Image (cartoon, rainbow, N blue to C red; front, top):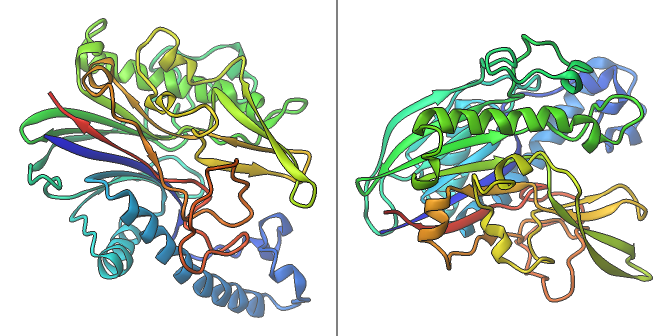
Length: 369
């Protein structure tokens, strides 16, 4: 009995307009900066028109990426709310490509922008096995104090009573074809808003490390300390951290070279350090594990994995030959691909936008025991 499990940061699946750029240029879309708009009402009209025009192409491309992944269960990040998820699933995913997901789950979390994690599920796997939801639990209300995770490093930017998860850890207990599977859907703290003197990744790592420890605590509490290795669980989502990256050096005119680099420290060491969970992306070539292209000019470019399906040791051992697939056809043309990795882009993909998302969906086929 096989199951296709996927994860995708769909990037700002919103149902509302953000007019904060009227007063804060850092929040203003670049195209509106080309125009001298002196009236707030006119600005709002232009922003509405811009976003509506851009969104249709974007969501068609998001739907194509999801269709190519063809997951039975898809974990999503950056979803505004249930109406947004329903409108996208019916108006784009189902109508456009015929991939319907009738089971939809979302719990409002802690993100200041209102973006949440969610899960889309078919009623049956492609093999005809029923997908049954037994229970859903949000852990958005957990604080550092609750799990005794507060430390000196966190104290530089947080309080003991602050919530651990910057969005949520959504726990979904399932039976697929009668066999148990527990999912933990997350979207860890972004690599931004760091304290002074540190780069974004280093300055926010303590928060992501606490989030990873909290996920591990939840799983160990669920199954019992020392017993997690024999259970079926997967931790899915955008974890905003990496243990390795491919440095991209050069320019389009001069050409590129690619250098793989291992990071000395990562929040994700909490999962991998003692074999608590397995990252099956390690089964791919070291140059071909990336799910996001990051660039701030030619001096700062790299490819890295931010999107994960971590497997329990039992699931990893039972699926030794299953290799995650990375759907890159929705990437914009500015993304730099290492030699031999180029893919055919979806129709209407632009240089920077429209695109399916800044992230790539990840999906893999699993057998459950």
